[in-house]
Length: 95
Image (tube, rainbow, N blue to C red; front, side, top):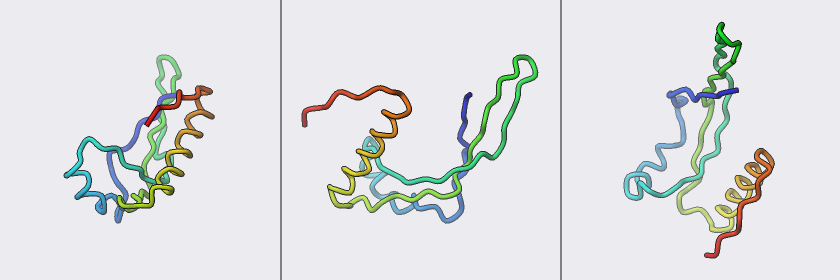
């Protein structure tokens, strides 16, 4: 089932704290913690396929200068969740 993301951010979101880092380092990836809910579903009459649209209800960005071990914990969690969903284990990268 396809899922789309609403283009609206929740009021009082935490991404503003990342503004400087986003502008100064546009190619870098950043972690956020988000909560979302389904805002609507659409069912196509021709084939019965359903699309869910989700909207963010909260989104926060950790401090860009967070401890290295905290960043590693977020990366580990993300990797574990992707492995559970896909069944694929990424190859380790040499640093």
